[in-house]
Image (tube, rainbow, N blue to C red; front, side):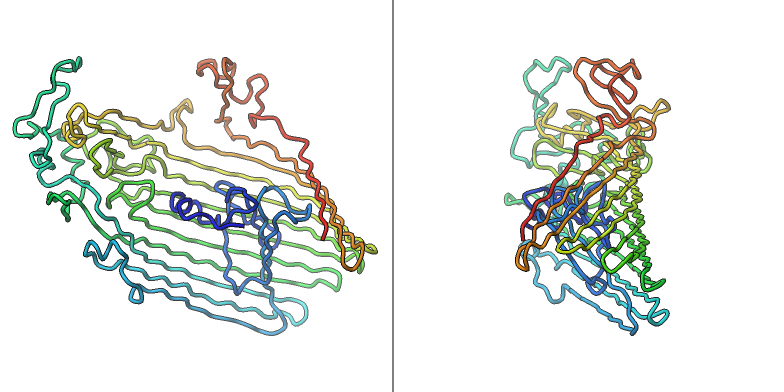
Amino acid sequence: MAPITPGLAQAGGSLRDGQPYSVNGQRPESNNFLIDGADNFNGVDGGFVLKPPIDAIAELQILTHTANAEFGGNTGSTTNIVTRSGSNEFHGAAWEFLRNDRLDAANFFENADGLTKSEYRQNQFGGTLGGPLRHDQTFFFGYYEGFRNRQGETISHVRVPSLLERQGDFSQNGQPLLNLCPNPPACSDLPAPFAGNKLPFIDPTAQNVLQLYPLPNAADPSGVEDLYNASQTLRDSEDQFGVRVDHYLSSRDALNFRYMFLNGSRFDPLSTSVAAVPGFPVGEDHRTQNFVAQLTHSFSASLVGTARFTFLRNKFLFDEHLNNTSPASLGFQYQPTLGIAAGPPFIQFGGGGYASIGDPITRPRNTYENAFATSNSLTWIRGHHQLKFGGDYRRDQINVINGIASNGFFVFIPFTISNAFASFLVGQPLLFLQGGGSQPDGGGDLSRGLRGHRLNFYAQDSYKLTSHLTLNLGLRYELPFPYTEIRNRQNLFEAGAQSRVRPDAPVGLLYPGDPGVPAGLIPTEKKAFAPRVGVA
């Protein structure tokens, strides 16, 4: 087992928050997570979704290559949490954990650039309470935990246009400003210099977009003021609670119910996938609910059966665009193709080191996942054998929408002007891209409604050969059905094939309903047998 690498965690941002480690050389997404035997798994990104406080946990198991046949579905590990239950006595706890920038030193870049020390204030607080509702028969246990984090983010030595460059004056750059294509479209004539290294005009739309750039507040080594330093504050807030009720119907029958709820939000002024300067923040909103109902019946002292129903709902709104300046208000002659993503286009420079600006190229990515599951098991102790048989069924509903360059994406390079930023000022991009949106015929529709289900069966025998030697034998069978889409908005590629469902589609694209293409695109795998053999 190894922790996730810092580089992977930073690049993935909050999409990696539920992926704490890698096991057996597998990807961080390859681990399964359970709470009281119920799924605690993000079916879109991988990783856990609920993280109950330590004081609400009775037991924690991390199963790797020694897992019994009861566990499967993932090639890494299975982490199973058992929550605490109440007792005949009332017990509670309360806590507050604090971290504060007043106790920290400024980081290296803040000291070097003379910046004010970044804010860092983290509070984690909560409490638990458990006890009887009816003596010797019904018990409860509940918890609440809040989390607040205000953490500074420092950007340093980012190149922004200087005060002169903002006016089209490049006389301080030390290099001649050339028109590389004085007689378009041929561009075969010799480059023509601009008088005084100054542009004769600035495009009105570029002038509007220019206001999105912060003014420089630091100088480069040559003394030209074209650098920008700043400290911004990332804000995280989260609240969660849970309650568990255990009720004994008789000496042979026990019921327990457990409900968990988590709600959180994030404001990030400098997302990893957005502009290099402030002004284009992204938000995040997540809410998770999990319910478990379980009945345990003892047929005899050696035979116990368990039936369980679980429900998990996970809403995750990632990289919400919070700067909603429309392209039209800046002077562009087009509209966003995804309304919830409306904002300024992303503008990138392929030379000169100028900071990119604008809302992210991709996102927002909004997912709503509902997972229903039912499972049954039978445990039988017979002599030196501890036998367990069972199975489960899971149904997934995943609704997702993912924006792709819906506000437009511009790239500027040192052409047709010899400076990339000058090319921007005169309105000469190398390329412009814009992702599609919802159309009446379904073309370019960025939303998807995925549906999937699976069946699993297992048999396990823990055979105690001696008091010092145990043989574990198991067999698991998994039947995962490929995900389908509610309106068949998915396709696959087969070279040279022409779709009959969509005759107007490009050659090679096939859709559900074409010969040999089922609703889930691929055949169902029906030979997923997984034997287990272990010696302890």
